[in-house]
Amino acid sequence: MANGQWYPPEWPDRIRALADGTLTPVVPRRAATVLLLKDTPAGPAVHMLRRRASMAFAGGAYAYPGGGVDPRDDDHHVRWAGPTRAWWADRLGMEEGDETVAQAIVCAAVRETYEEAGVLLAGPGPDTVVGDTSGDDWEADRLALVAHELSFAEFLDRRGLVLRSDLLGAWTRWITPEFESRRYDTWFFVAALPEGQRTRDLSTEADRTVWTRPAEAAAGYDRGELLMMPPTIATLRQLLPYGTAAEALAAAPERDLTPVLARARLLDGRVELSWPGHDEFTKHVPAAPGPRGGAA
Image (cartoon, rainbow, N blue to C red; front, side, top):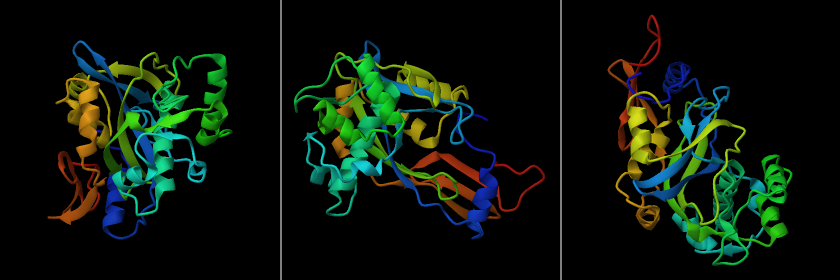
């Protein structure tokens, strides 16, 4: 490949099946992921993990901490700081009255950052953040969250913590293409590493974690050395103009959250796969399997 774009070998057949009407799209599951940033002398760095090659979805690709929304966080009114749930529902594109859904999405962003990186955007009060979370008691709770033995709302209640939604900025939203067998409707957030906390290599789905400047990671992708899904490299490029984590967070409220969804259409005997607004990811697939199949 010329770059590190993640492109599974089964996609051409699935794209053709979608184009000819023989594939029924799976309903995407709501999810959240977080671009966790910290300042360095050379500019902000972002925390990334490399998914294990054995993973069924995007094995070997670099990504950010993230995962699916837990339905249990819909119906429990967690202690909350920052913009209201109604504000978040509007910001995230929810229908009026879907404040519980917005709460669950924000909870997913904070929970996944804690589960996969050990960083917790919560504190005992609306203006505080917990310090080091690497103790044995914290680890026991983290593992209970990972095992789904404990909901995030229950975890916050147990520890008397307030979720700091003001430490998150909604950045972009991508929906997995309709031809994928595993689909997610994912909200991407930005956040700064809280003072006193540090990341840890905790995810069972990853075999490596790194702090890297967006320009360095993007260059590795362009050389074909780092494998990434389109939304990952797209968000890395979007971070390039910002000189500090605070600048990126300040820019978040003006970001367009219109969902990015790949389109597949028949064009001159080929299926064209494109992501609106992101021409670099366009692929062309033969309308019928050629001698070798695959994409051009």
